[in-house]
Image (cartoon, rainbow, N blue to C red; front, top):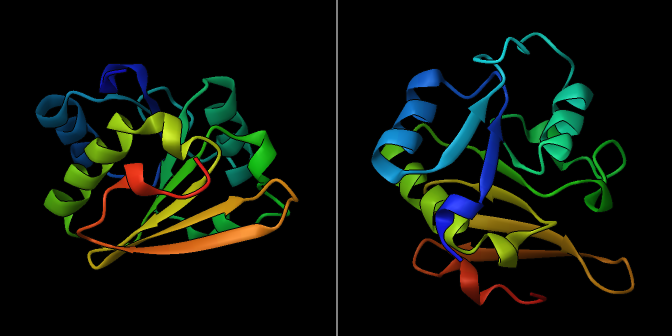
Length: 143
């Protein structure tokens, strides 16, 4: 499956220039809360909007790691950006989009040095994996 099949919904804290770069240079399907006049809405609304669009939520808000407020079973996935290095992050998001089936239902925290993947196993126990910048998302266990 190609990256065009992966949908991403960016909440309001992801800059529009960054979203446009993902579209123009990386050919990704990204909708923006700001562009569809949904900025200013609460995080829970944004979480539900991404779910209704069958999209991964792209955000800079680490609050989405809260599994009580934002449970794994109620989402496509969440990608949390924790760096300002846009070139690196755009490349990593493109790689994730290429492997969207492997990251479905996971929360991913992206920084310049690592990718932390949060998921649940079949017994509903949380799994946390830390991957270096050289490791590929397709190598994620539990997929």
